[in-house]
Image 1: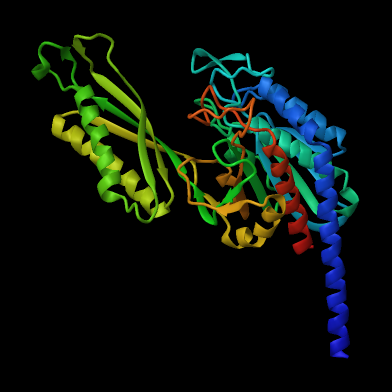
Image 2: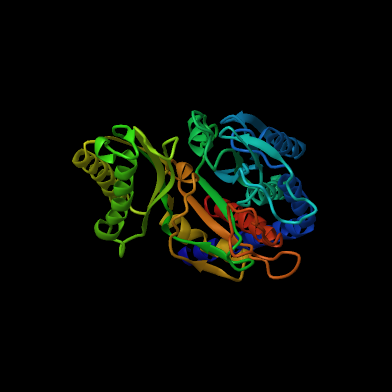
Amino acid sequence: MKLISLVVLGYFLSISTLFSQDLNKMAINKAEKIEKKVIEWRRYFHEHPELSNREFNTAEKIAEHLKGLGLEVKAGVAHTGVIGLLKGDEDGPVVALRADIDGLPVTERNDLPYKSEVVAEYNGQKTGVMHACGHDTHIAILMGVAEVLSSMRDELNGTVKFIFQPAEEGPPPSEKGGASLMVEEGALTNPNVDVIFGLHIAAGTLLGQISYKSGGFMAASDRFEVKVKGKQAHGSTPWASIDPIAVSTQIINSLQYIISRNAELTKEAAVITVGMIQAGVRYNIIPEEARFVGTIRTLDMEMQKMIHEKIKTTAKNIGEIAGAEVTVEIVNNAPLTYNSPELTQQMIPSLKKASTNVQSVKAVTGAEDFSYFQEKVPGLYFFVGAKPESEPYIQPLNGHHTPDFILDEAAMLTGVKAMLNLTLDFMEMNK
C-alpha cells in the first residue's frame, strides 16, 4: 500500500514539474513576442529621463500601462513610485519585482535617434538629464514582465507585486526618497511580500551574462562630511592663521591610511573617496573654514563600524594638533546588498533557464538601495550583461554614470526571461 502511495505521489510530482516547465515556456514565448515593445518603451524613457523624486511623467506612463493590464495600481508611493498588484487565480506566495526609474544629472554625448535633450536644475545648476545607468531598461523590462504575467493570471499560484521605485540614485538634499521611503510607506505590505527580486543592467559585462553572488554582493554606501574651522589670516602671514585647507589635506591623506593599514582587505574590499572640497574665496586669503565630502564603501558590517570610528578619531586628532575645530558627520545612504544564500541557491536554476552564461562573481563596491527591501524580506539581486558587440552600439572605455553610457538592447530580453522564471519557479516551489 505504501509503495502504491509513493508511486502515485511521484506521478503527481512529475505532472506538476511538467506543468511548471510548460508554464515557463509559455511565458518565454510571450516575452519573445513583445521584445520590440520592450525596446520601444526603453527608448521612450531614455529620451524623456527625469531626476530623482521628479519622475512625474515616468510614473504616469508606468501607471497607465499597469492599469491597461488590469492590475490594481497605487501611485504616489515615496513621492513618484508606482506599485502594481497582480493576483493569480490560486493562493500562493507574494513575489515582489522591483525596477528603479530615475535618471541622472548627466548631459548625453551619444548620437542616437532617441538621445536625451532634457535639461533640468540640479543643486542650483542647469544640467542635462540622462538615463546614464540603465534605469530606463529596468522600467521597460518590468513593464514587459507585467504584460506577460497579467496574460497568464489564470495559471499563477500566488500574487506578484511590481514595484517601480524612484530616487535610487538618492533624493535631493533635504528630501526623503528611494527604497527606504517605499518600505516606510508600506511597499512590502498589504499584502505582505514573501520574497523580492531585482536586476541591474551591466554595460561592461558580456551580452546576456547573468552575474550574481550569494551573501554580500554590493557595498554599503555611507556619506561623510568633515568641517574644519580654523583662523583666517592674510596669505602672506600663514603663521597668524590656523589653516583649515592645510588641516583638511592632512586629514584627507590620513584617511587612506585607514584603508591601507586598518582594513582587513583580504576579508572584503573597502573604499574611502573624497569627492568634493570647498574652501576660500580669494587666492591670498587663508579662509576660516573648509569642508569636504566623500563616500565610504564597505562589504562587512564590522569593517564598516571600524572605518566610521577611525574617520572620526583621525579627523578630530589632526584638528586638535593643529588647533582647529573639526566636526564629522556620517550618514548611511544604503546598507549592504545582501543576497539570501538559501534563496540564491534555490533560484540559480531559474537564472540558468534565462541564459547559458550564468556566473557567480566577486562583490563590487558599487551600492544599491535595493538593500532596504532585503533588510525586510529575503531577496536576490543580479546583473544582466549588456556590453555592445556590434554597431551602432560601441562601448566606450567609461561606463555607467558617464555621458557616453550605452548598451545593447538585446540584453533586455534576457532580463525579462530571468524575472519571469524566478517568479513562476518560486511560486511553484512554494504553492
